[in-house]
Amino acid sequence: MLGLSWILGGRDWGRAKDEQFESGVLGQGTARLRFSAKFYLVAMFFVIFDVEALFLYAWAVSVREAGWAGFIEASIFIFILAASLVYLWKIGALEWAPASRRPSSPSEPDSPAAKPDRPAR
Image 1 (tube, rainbow, N blue to C red):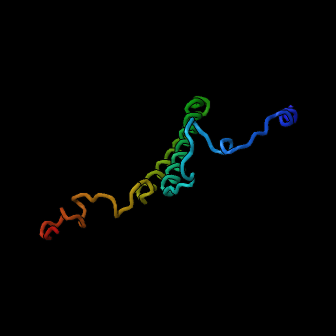
Image 2: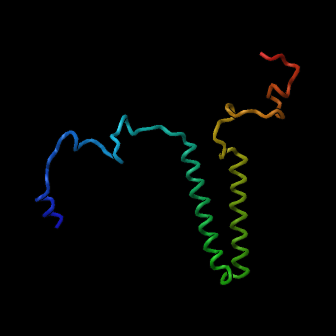
Image 3: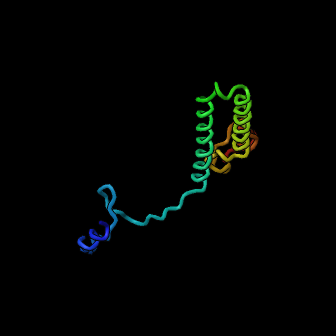
């Protein structure tokens, strides 16, 4: 059947046939865009913690059959994931902007608001 459709099918080629067409809009420019690695990092974190939610849902469905052993295993699992989230937060992996572009708070020693004796420029 596939061979028959290939034999009987049309072979009309032209400029309009070679153009990309998606959702009624003709493409403009190149599809090669550079994204920051932070986007991919956040996507990986999302997948990791989403799979965590999937495991916890499966545990919640079978909590009566798992008993206390399952509860202890789930508690250890939650503790490890919470510790990894705290670690990612501490190293700054969840920060979007670099430290040089983040607004400083008045309690930081490098901010101009913390040092009123220095003349403003």
